[in-house]
View 1 (tube, helix red, strand yellow):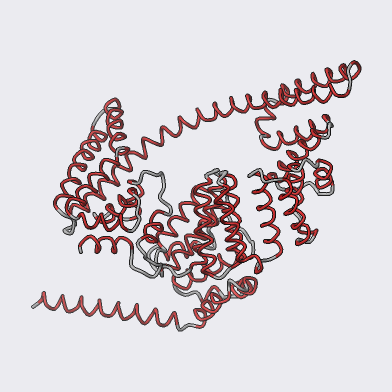
View 2: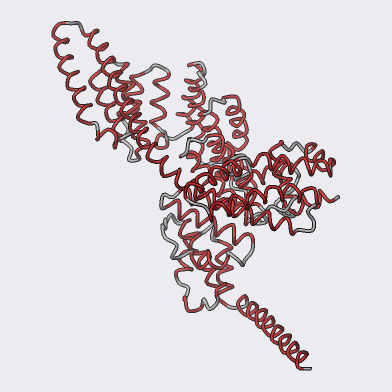
Length: 557
């Protein structure tokens, strides 16, 4: 009797708590401040300045729940970013980070992780920014906000460009272009296409670059003057890099001047094109009429082009001066360390040049200057190489220490993930056998790390490293087991055009691994966009089911 009474009381309390939660949510969403925030969300893209003004006028005392605080924090972070107010701290966004970690829609999570990544980018931490962007794509898999998704891929492309990883840079900008197009932002779509053209040009994949140029022409009449000017610049540089005939380059350059107002002309690139056309007077004219840019990257381009033009105009002193500024900008730290040695080379050259000018003709002077430039370039190259070697050795020691720590952490995480799969009744016995075999080795190595001496630990780490790095064999055995039990499943994936690596990932989804666990098993260091590729090939849209659920249902048919 007493037991039944206790159950009844607990049941009544549970119903009361649920009712309070429901009515609390209704009260929040019927409140005036909630309606105000929802209204701001509707026009924050088109009128970010108005949105910021309204949000700044909100009385914080009216944000009476965590949900209201989170919604306000996210919208305020969006408004600040869209008004080019770059934050490097999480004071504004933190309530959204805390709340949407376990609550909110897929769109809320997508946006929160994106703007968290933007803050890391503002602070110069690209690694943490990339982690946030990856989480955004994973957590917001079912989000309908294709515009934020486009911006995420665009931001990832920026990070890859800093790493000179042009393959990933191109891929991210292709994804960004697709989503910008879906969002109806033609100018942003065109901008992403231009980056794809630039990436293919840097990769010397000129045929692909020209194909994207043709795609770009479909929107050329619907873009801003700035974007049209960018197109001409990228197209001209592609023609130059692909060694197109000078007549074609000249024709396109004239078209650039005819269609783009003078104020929008990119004179640095124009001077480079004139150098390709061997019209060094025009190249210098383009540079001399142009204010030296503020950004370091543009300064580097400026002095590189200036040095090349002066060299061909037989002005060795000016060429050397421009070259020195170029070197200083490209590697100022290393240059300062060895400044005395470099100055010694330059001073010695000036004395030799003066003596030769008194004895020899002016034609010999130009030759000596070229030789001096080569000597300086080689000396600086060797200096930089030595510094890079020393820096790399120091970094390697730090990496080695962190690597062993990460290996152990990875082993623990893998053991926990595999243990959960053993407990999953939907996993077949043949697959469980493969998993148990790997678990046995993992547990042995982990135990030896905990109990043994430092010398034994080193041996354990070596075994652990061999196990963790040999994940290909685990993936292969998993795939063979699934293929033996269900060959139709593997055949269906191949028919959809999936690569072997993508099929391996599908098999890991089938046995119960989640997206974050699969990171540890892919052959690439990170698998930022592999799930998106698989979904595309399987014909899944953003509104379709979760990829893991889809694959497991497909395997069970």
